[in-house]
Image (tube, helix red, strand yellow):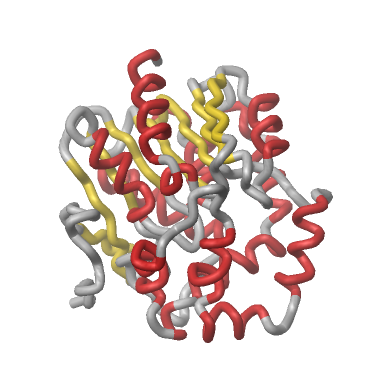
Length: 288
């Protein structure tokens, strides 16, 4: 049994379920019933960062949220294919196994390309898209990426990620906007990676930014099957990496968009200003 004694169940009051896939256990929550909302997280987060939305929406919708292998309460094996494309394949297996359809997708950060790749392949399963501070194309020519690329290429990166828990302990707090995350809440992001043997997932996502840019661009070029779906873009404008121009590109490539701009937020609108995010999603769901 996994030790979850560190987790405050009063703020994450959901029943844990596990899906056996790729010889590992993928943790997920599946709350209530009705039309399905599927939540897909990025790095270095897990289903925890959608808790406010799930608690608010589960009275009227079936809320399903996964933890990618290597994250949250899922298994974190040392020897595993942590590639972004394999996460996408795993998500597709999960969706098929659970019989999910008529899905409203809520995706953030790396959850965007992972989940949208599944939607592009299986458009009949998806009804709406909600995208928070994410991307779906190559960023190789972007100044922010070029600057960050030097860090990713550093031989120190694996040491920082594995032995200093660099992604949740340092990068996540710095990605916030005006509202800062307090130390107690931050523990819910650092504790899933308590030992250096549990930190291969976030490190692999960092390396993905070097290896997967061509795949991201391929997804953008094949987006037609989902580009007319009702889409809500929720964007923290103080995000220093996934900036406002990423939002504008989404609006150019998806023809049926509504936009919620959040000037005070950084990379995690759902954690920084959850009430505004929930209100926006409720209005979107009621009108589409």
